[in-house]
Structures are given as C-alpha cells and as structure tokens.
Image (cartoon, rainbow, N blue to C red; front, side, top):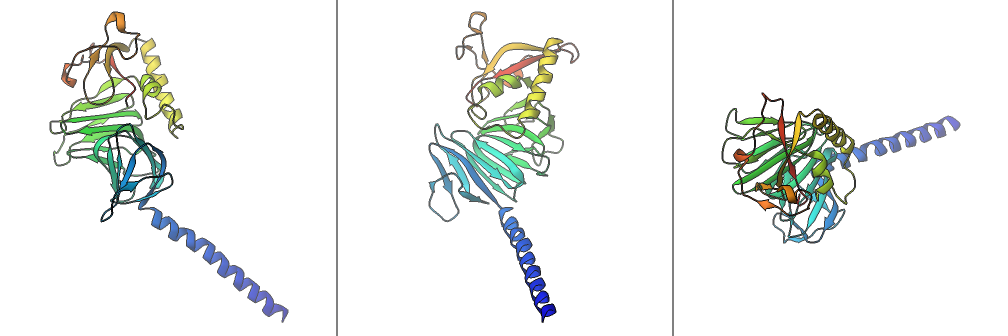
Length: 286
C-alpha cells in the first residue's frame, strides 16, 4: 500500500510539473504577436480592424495590425516581443506585424530601441525602410520628408525595390531627404544635445540602451577635443528637415534662430579628406 501511495504522489507531481511547464509556453507563443502599452500621454487611440477606435490605456494589449495613433501634444510607448521599445511622438500612426520583425510608421516619428536579441527588426515608412536590430534609432516620415538617425549601434536605411540604394548609418549619424529620391550619405549630429532636449528621452524612464548611448556620446566628446569633430551653428528645431542657423549673438539663446530653410544637400560637407567633420545638432521637439 505504501508503495502504491508513493507512486500516486509521484504521478501527481509529474502531472503538475507538466502543467507548470506547458502553460507558460502557450502564453509565450500567444504574446509573440502582441505588444503592451506602457505609457500614454494625452490623446492616444487604438484602431483595431473591424472595430471602432477607442482611447488607449496603460497595459492595453496591442495585436498585429492594430494602429496606434497619437494626436497633437500626445505621446505613447509600447513594448513589443523581444523587449523592443517603441516611443511615439505626437501626430504619429504606428502598427506592426510578424511579431517584432516588421514595424510600420504610417506618418510621424518614432524612437525604437531594438536589442540584438530581437533579431531581424525592420521599420518601414512608405518607400523607405530601416534595418534596426541592435540599435537605438529614430525614424521620422511625412510625405516628401524622411529622417533617420542612430544613437547607438549601426542601422541601414534603404529603399526596397531599388537595388544598391542603401547606406549604413552609425552612432551619431543621420540621413534625411526625400523618401522618393536616392538615399543620401549620412551627416553627423550631436548625441548629447539630442539626449538632453528630445521629448523621446527627457522626463521618461531610461532606455535599456542608456549606457550604450552615453558611451557613444563620450566618443563624440573625445573627437571634439581632438578637433576631428567640430560643432556648427546649424540646428533642426523639431520635425522635418528645416535647418536653422544660429547667429553669433544668438548661439546661446534657446529657441531663437536666424532661420533659413535648407535642404540636406546645403549642409557643410566633411573636409580634410574626412578628417574634419561638421556636427549638426537637433533640438527638443523630437
């Protein structure tokens, strides 16, 4: 009798162990196609297929194909499968499919921190795409305007269907221009200034890549001290590709510019056979 009782207990323990190990696997399989909203500021909507739009809340689950839309002065943050973090600026529409792998920016701007463990992550915006695994990067898109920058890691901006039309973008570099034209070469921007002024960063919990971004910023400071990178008075205040020039008397006055519209091609080019590069800085709207 005692042996039979022991066998029954052993069988019960074995069945319980099977249940414990099985159910989390099934839950994980379901979550591969879902994201969770971790931050909502002001007016953020979820537009699910075949359903009416409704206001988003923290901890809402977002399925593939659901559009997350922010309105004026509104922001949101999501965590996707693979621990990819996506932060949405105001007036942005965003969705995803294929788990972490394919992110879609309808319009607006997003900051994405895609760790190396989240393999094969791409972000698409109409005619351009970025390969962003192992990077912290930002993509902005509006009809006729595209801006892609990398804070840490190395991304690739390319135009699908246009063989060879792509460029590697390293930390502290950005590419901007017309998304319907050939991809241009990257220029430099000031990581430290971006981190101190960007609404994607300021007042929000640190990203997991914070130390990596800080390390890349420190490298830039070392290059500045060696004069291989030199600050300019060129600034982009917020979205778009409008370049403003800060006058000598106004250089230390935040938000005041002697504004002059410019295209990416009017920016100073690297000089001295690549030994001296002008630095471009970006202010707080993004």
